[in-house]
Length: 237
Image 1 (tube, rainbow, N blue to C red):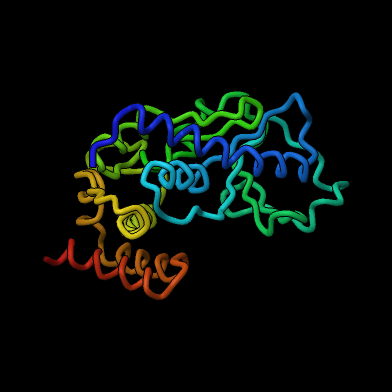
Image 2: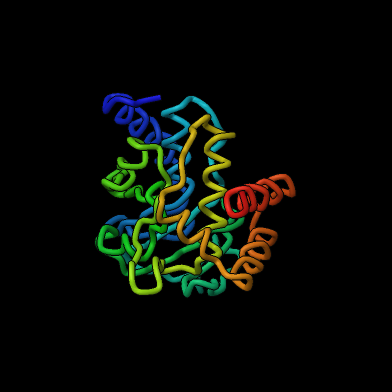
């Protein structure tokens, strides 16, 4: 399926209408000032857009944010709990949302944080609460164009390809995206040569870490088995 620009723009507009009321509630729960922005990134934005483009699938419930200015969490009765997360940001629950991840705070321009927040080209878009708009990057448009999952940022050195994240987690996540895009949206996405290079060069320790990571993160036994089976098929075919 080859989408035209008009199809993509219509899907973006539809996703913006779907996301806007959610962003309003988040801003209210977090007591975000009317002059400050909040940016929604990750699967919630991507899946809303892909659902509109394909008329298929269920939208991710994971809410990942970046904030222009950090509000006070301590004196906010809407916030039921909060703690630092494993990535150095904050994880919290509110009266309206059981779990929200805030990756960055004091962000005026999320485009400057592309290398830190967007791990894959299929994730390279964000929603601005103040502007009520989705901003896809050229990398996201590239994903839609060539149906290939690739790293957003990577480094090629004498040891091969390195990413900002652990190679085993990136392999597991890439395979998860490939499987879910097929099952949810009927998108036959390929893995880039960069991802296949990393996949085929995991040593035994990294391979075991990939299996362990998948078992921890996959949200169903079926998905866990599919990821590991596909890895073994590609690695040991």
